Length: 368
Length: 223
Image 1 (tube, rainbow over the protein chains, first blue to last red):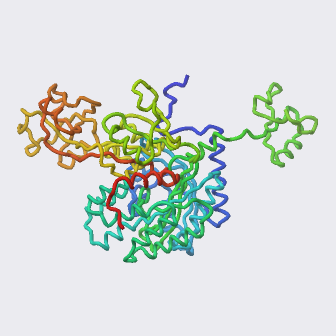
Image 2: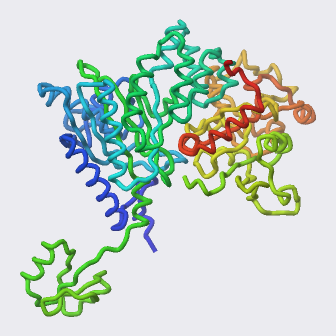
């Protein structure tokens, strides 16, 4: 019986050895991959002044962050719910003088004040990479390719990438000189993909956006047909180049009006999915770092659901038991060869109960 | 998402189902015979062609099953979609069935005493739709204290539980028989095809399903 006083708050959990091992492996695999592509890791703090958490990204809110007063400065602090703005701050301050493009990566826990019924989790592992100094097609291609590779390295299969053009609705609305209320109503109906309500909201001209979604090649062709004024032409061309670069490595789809989770992205965004993982695994896109001249492109992965799945499938690893009085040099050499080895504490230690599969006996490693 | 597994399609018990079945049939989803057997207590049925599993649940649960991705698609009233406002739900096709409206009603004799033009800043509302109701009243500068009921809303005003109700109205007969009058229409309601966002993007069968339903209901698709 667990004493109720030991229960964790809703949406928070311990990762026990199986899933902690899976989480560690995922984190390490992704960071190694990013390191191999020249992305330097940065480690921003857990807590910062509240305004710093939002001022670098237009559309970022601190409403869902844990916030409290700093007894030292008497200013509001916020616990991070997304590390991207922190990386933006680092690029705009400590690394402002470094030559661009600047390649940075990060891994850490993020938290939000409330979960919801569909996703009660209030703490997540966030892994990501940001390329600061470019939001062009080449940068977009590099980041999408890297995001796919990162998911592959993490153990995801059946990867699917959904592209979007986050600012396309604004561009089209501006072109038609629609007022803000109408634009908002149109966005709302585009969000639910409700063609009937979209027409009712005065967004008849936007209905084709709903049909220009689905498998990439088909959808982008429809979007190009619809874009008779060539307002989106450069974006369409950019997307085609990105898609050509990663084609064959993932299933590609397009949904130009998608904006769930794209609060601050500009011309380009993408969402990542994988087989057997409920909901999105991550997203990325291009954006501006406010208060600087820097444009940037990046992605973040939230692999907790994937970790759950991998943790369940975690296989038991071999482990070597080193009995009391064993030759320390033999133990050291076994570990050097890659063995995971447990040294006996007492003469009564039971190798099998400790999870060992092999034992060191008379200088040789034997199966238990 | 395992392509070999059947798609799960959620349909609501009650009001909409009778009208939805012919539409589903035209889109190629025909439940096995046991579905129509009143004595059958099963909740999950195969379709005739085995490609779909049909689950019959409460209307509000249709939205939850689909938003969670436990079912990939379903049919539900726009009232339910609006109440939950799940970001994981798409409602791509208005099926133009199950028409009714969501309205505010109040006791006939009490009308005028504290009507909405000379209103207080607080009102107590009995409803199955606390989110829609409080949002609607909020826009009119009224703090609505919602009492969530699951049925028989019409009883609430006469027994003093609340001054007004927010409920579905089709003919208005139930209201009239309980001494209530409709004062405001909050929204027109019709049944929608809903799909899970991630499923639409990762499972080609879901997009095909949407296309089949779209073909049944002509909307303003461009030439």
